[in-house]
Image: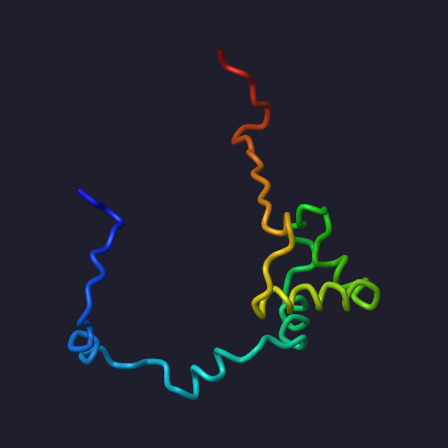
Length: 109
């Protein structure tokens, strides 16, 4: 069995004719626009200020409070990524934290 492979089929036009479009050309034009700084700032201001600090330990409150200092660099970096530039090295790192289900976990052998 060749799972996750293709034989490069063609001729989907007839099949696709029966599917009704949901996204209009005007909607698609809006979706394809470049991201703008106002959108990034609005998203930041909608985030809860004390939840989910990033790998650097900074939560949204830090960025909201010191936006006048860090804002231009953060905004430039975020807009570059959202508009197609590659992620800076290490920007997509993930930390996994195991949270014990009981107050006093013990090691079982």
